[in-house]
Image (tube, rainbow, N blue to C red):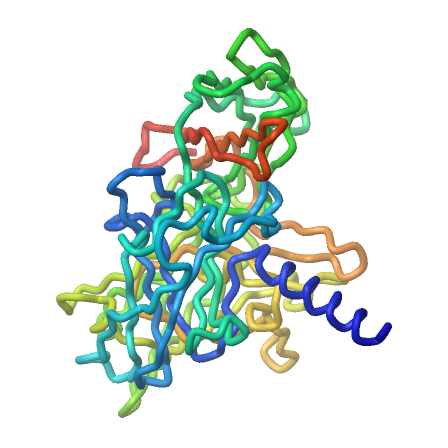
Length: 423
């Protein structure tokens, strides 16, 4: 009995942990997209009781027909499932089949593209907050294909703010600081400092999100966040890019290609450490990627795939001492897994990795991770002038509430001038 209890507790712990991030669990699943319809760069955010639609799409590389289902799981502020019956926060069916699919056409690579528009009229979230969308096979939740975060907002807070340079000398030229306020209406803010929580995302990233931020001042229904030690992010640099909108016409970052009868291989030019390079503005898409092509009508089921070979030069042709290097961006979900780890090749003196990517336009970067401490860094450098998009999420939990409500969302960009070049 003790062993059985321990195993069950371990299974529950693993299941909860698996839902904490956007993850893909089946190797045949590629190009998972979840965003506001017609806006591939957006967070998957739905305004409660609105006509908003979110696009959920993915490719099954087995190229046959399967029964995929999805469901919503309501979570708290820390992305832990709450102890509520699904019928308390879902209007309609608790699981729905993804019935829209198309076989790939034109492309050399065979796959089946599945897509759905959420929320469906048969399954509507009825509460604001954090949700996990779980996609699984054959109506069996143990056959999990992938998970994605969903934000459902009931706008009761107005967020305004600006980006300023930190006063700290060693961060003045390398970091960006958010100074913002939230005007809350429609909820009981008797003890706002304890009931309201704020999360800040930089370029839609959850891996470096800033959490548990306390207001500097509370003035009636207005919460001000302007103390010097909060809201400070390394500014980074504009992301590296990869243009796969055409596989025939090789873009500037492609060194060479190998075109086979049923597949395509592309070899990228070798990347280098950019941390010591001067800052030059080059318009990017803030780490995300778009599924798009030059030569087809609908890229979601007509876009082809290519095996892309990445390479990175180490310092002086040698590996980084005591550090692992990972490919990072929305294409990797910013995860430190073996799939995205750059392997050092002694014969070439380069870090190398290869992955199957669909036609589109990609942003990416390289993140280092200390083997002893787990501390992370980048090979990009930090410059205050960098264009970054920040999302401020405001959560509220009353003393009688059983989960955290998402009551506000604000968007702030670090620069709006978008110059052609800036040094």
